[in-house]
Image (cartoon, rainbow, N blue to C red; front, side, top):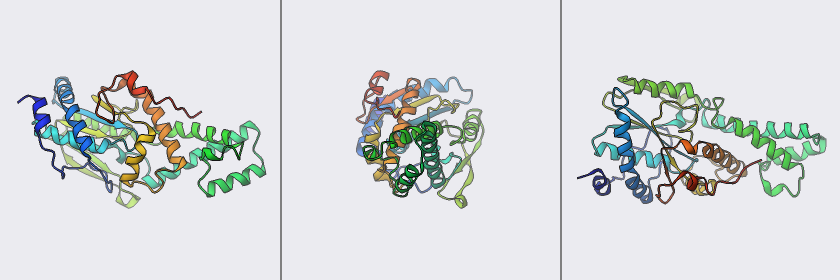
Length: 310
C-alpha cells in the first residue's frame, strides 16, 4: 500500500491527542480530516527528504495561519497520521510561548493600540479636552476601534490608524513572543536531545510550568501556531500555511470559545493586522492549503487578502 492509499484509507478516531495548550478546546471537523488526507502524501514526501539533512533524522513542521484557521485540529490529525505511517510525531503549541499570560497579553495589545491612537491625535494637532472626553466614553464602551463611529467622530480616523500602526508593530514581535525560548527547544530537538523542556502557559501565573518531555523516539515535531513562519522563528523545516481570511476565521474563533470578545471591532482589527503579517510571510511557505482543501500557489493564496489597515 502506497502512502496515498494509506492516507485515504486509515480511520481517524474521534479521541486522537489534541496538543499541549492547557484549557484549549480543539474542534476536529470532517472537513479537516478530508483536507488532511489530501495534504498528507505531500507532507510525508517532504518529511522523508528533510530527514536526510538531519543527522538524527529529525524534522520540524509548522502548521500556521490566522487565529481560528483550524491549525490545532490539522496538526493533531497530521500527527496521528504520521504515527500510523510509522513515523513518531509530537504536536506542540506555540501559544505556550508569549511573554505574558493570555489575559495580560490581551490587555497589553489593547493598551498599545490605545496609546498609539492617542499619540497619533497628539501628533496631528487635533487632540483637545473635548476629544479626550469623547474618546474616554468610547474606550469605556470598548468602541474605540469600531469604524461604525467614524462618521460621528471625524478624529477617530487618525486614532484608529495610529493605534493600528502601533499594534501591528507589536503583534508577533519579540516584544510579544519569547522566540528565544521556543527556538532553544526546537534546536535541542534537532540536535538529538533525548528530552526537551516544554512550556505550559495556562491561563494565569500560577499555572505556568515546564515539563521535561521524552523525545527519544520522536522524529517529527509539529508546531501549531499563528507565528509558525515568522522570521524570528528558527529551525522549522516545513512551514504549512492554512490559508483563510479574517472573516473566515471568525466562525472558528467563536466555536472554540477562547475569548469573550471574539467578534469585537478590536478583535477584528487584530485579525486583519495578523493577516497582513501572515501575507508578508506567505512566500516562505512550503505548502499552502485553502479552507476547502485545495493546494494553492502563492498568487492564489494572496488573492483576497488585499485589505490593509492604514
